[in-house]
Image 1: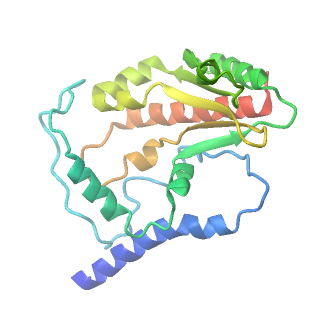
Image 2: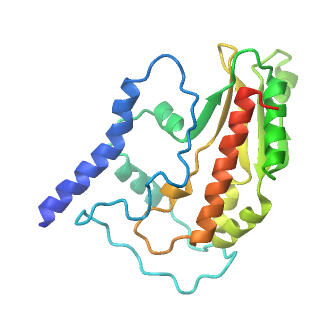
Length: 241
């Protein structure tokens, strides 16, 4: 394949990846789809998603001086981050609100459930899955204390598989900024109760051609944690006890 052909293939791939969700978004109905937002480990996404002969960017070699729990001392500058993000966003049709929507997994609690019932169901499911509850914050109370006025309820509930977390942080300590797994529970302008979490998915986080990937064992553990968070959110949304 010639270089122009490879460049055309790469450009088309970027366009389809960026525009595809946008096209699908136009076909959404008014009713929210509360189905499973995580496809599980057999979704067919992996490190070799690029078709044979497709354009691949050059990557660094395999890192041989890696040690567990070592923080990278190399700081990626703000300018480098900006240029990288601008390059990736060139074909992106999404607004900022759309991008935030894409980065979270969310479920709407069924009608009739109270806020406290949603949180209670989440806690019960987490206990069954051996996910420890390690935090519960109620910022709406702080807002009401400052303003003296009622505000829509907002709470953050944190769950964690501590042993898997330790293994992940041994591999990349910088991931500590994203743990423990946090689920936000909030009331919107219509009085609906929503559950949301950062949709981190190891299957697309670890699909670059860079050879410094996580081990298969850690990959499976990370997938299990993501599935457990999905289950906790589902229990909360449905009021399962």
